[in-house]
Amino acid sequence: MTENLEQSKKVILARFGEMPRTVITLGSGLGNLLEKLELEAELDFSQIPHFKSATVTGHSGKLVVGKLGKERVACLKGRLHYYEGYSMDEVVFPFRTLAWCGAENFFLSNAAGGIHPDMRPGELMLITDHLNLMGNNPLIGTNDEKLGTRFPDMSQVYSPFFRDKIVEIANRQGLKLRQGIYAGVHGPSYETPAEVNMLRRLGADAIGMSTVPEAIALNHMGRKIAAVSCITNLAAGVGQGTLNHEEVLTAAKLIQEAFSLLVKEFVHVVSK
Image (tube, rainbow, N blue to C red):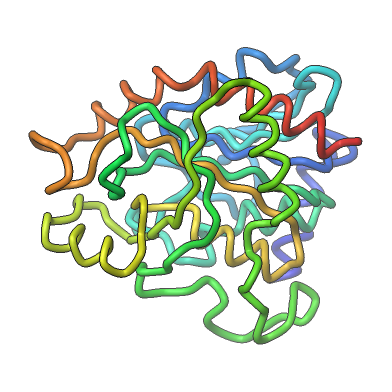
């Protein structure tokens, strides 16, 4: 594992120089943030050793570095998903690599279906905890002590400090920000109404097909994590009509400006 990480690190640092402290992951339809970025350089996933190619609409598969306001950041424009047929190691490898390169803070975002009955499309939800219902875990297999301990604590995966700061920022901006538990499932089919009802009974407020694997891997490496879901649709049985990916991308566009302002101020705050 570490040999592959070193090979990827060499290419990334040759392109960007020192890795920024903060990495932002842009989920489905949330790439508008890059328009506010003063671009320094970028790499396609295909140019980085051991990175797989993103295959989902809305995930272009690029690593971008530039300035967001006054702060230098790295952005993953898109991510890999377990349902694309990749192994868990392959899904989390880009995140492990950036942490290996020296990144300390990770802001994860995703498009998610709302399960809580009070949620509406176009809202943001700060993830306070998660349910791993993917039937797999990126830490399965031989543990490399250079990455982290065999049995990492998971009681505070999403940094309480980061969560408090994000709530403060949202309040200053007058942004309605929900807080809740994210259920990670492997997809790619959307859930049935019966499955959504089960997840709600288990305590989930939103559901999606990403974020959990990378959060586990980054927590394993001791990195600080914040995560926000853009509620792009109501899950089956909660809302009316059928579900489709185009609806997700359209709804994400409606919240992009508020999301961008939230992330921009977050980066400024954590960089002090």
